[in-house]
Length: 621
Ligand code: M6R
Image (cartoon, rainbow, N blue to C red; front, side, top):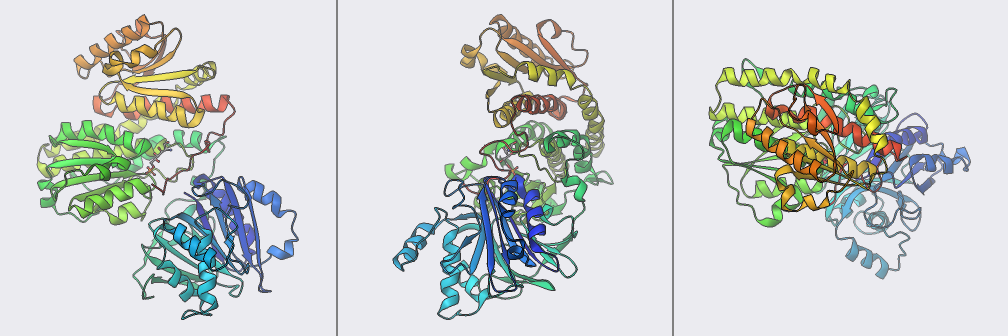
């Protein structure tokens, strides 16, 4: 995904746009660029491969008067089409240099459009799909039915584009106007006093205004300093808008004294879990945030699919254990990227739970659309108010983790796991598989978790020391059973994405079916132990597994409940976590693994917040 910014107002636009790009950097950091509209009818553009800081350094070589205008657009890129080079950086311009565009998403039919432009004698200077949009708008503005009309020219081009895109256009002839449009990728309007903002998310303008409007699917917005106008792509009709007030402040999007956002976000987990629970038990009833399904619809559900990607998928694996246990409904957990291609059997009594921090992951969004096409009901678990996935869902439960800037998901994972438990309880309530007092007891146990997470956070120094010690290890393995299995997968994913290390998570029972061959002297293996007071059989099977691991000379790093004396003799390194109900243990056992990965990446000198090749949300399939 990329970060997109627009501004029209009374201040010099360059500062506002560059600051917004810094806040959007987590969305992509392959290149950055700006286009500033001058009163003199000129468009000043600078763009560079690298982070927004590289752009700022390049801007220092320009005459400041060139970039003094009060309207402009900006972009920070995560490369899809074309390598991250200066010439592929946005903004892209048309041949006259009068139109500039920034783009997030993918224009799927760019190859025929590019061929059409080339056939018309236009030379494209980048390898991107985005550049075609600038040329097409310039052509539409130059002649034909939309000639001389900026907004109509943009609208006519939008109708030719396929794929998922947010596009923001500036035109030298309109120094006080920015035109933008969105289909499936996000854009939010920030409403200030005598100034208007556009951003891929609200972090772009939170320091200037908390009043915002979510741009809907297939909508166009025109901003000037005095206001904004939202219409649809096609007929240019006015559409209903959804204004909202942002309920977090600038501090939430800043590092607050930590070296990395991820460290701050790990520390914020007790609050993320507590806030996700808040307000969801009213008069003994579990309440969702948005509910467009009737009680009967929920009662009729006879099958649940959970669809998600990456870390969100791991949270979905945890959900399976809880939902099946509490509701006796069959639950399948699917990678969203696989779901719709294997022709899943869905009907109106199927509930598809789509989990996504960003609410804009393309694979998950397409899985939602496929589910809805087949008549299934969709419940979204999302951290981003008004994002596309919750907009298209029949019911929504928001995780209230606040902005997660670190690319590696931490607090959102714990918040997703928490929200998934609430989904399980809501279904149990609707189906009557749990009495009200049982639901209240489960909820009370959840409410006790933030304090226990806080305790775990206070004991992480030895984990960090271990990470530094193991920094040159060639690989690390993770094993768990039951809800410890998704924790093992998540521990491995964190280490891969942050420390670029070979890391694998396995179901402990699978070890002897192959992966045990990987074990050798000194190889670090994290073992996530279930509670000895939970299901005795799980604990004793894990004890057998850990013996098998130790017998092959591997180094066991055991996450176990305080007071678990049976496992102590088999742990080369013991990480103790407080006792809690079996199903809720991932809220504790994941935390040391997050800290381990962050510390190890830091020890290797890697950028913990911006791991290579990754972006915070993947809006292309
Ligand atoms: O925004 P989403 O929750 O849909 O994102 C899903 C994954 O892309 C995301 O969890 C990814 O795996 C994270 N980088 C993991 O830390």
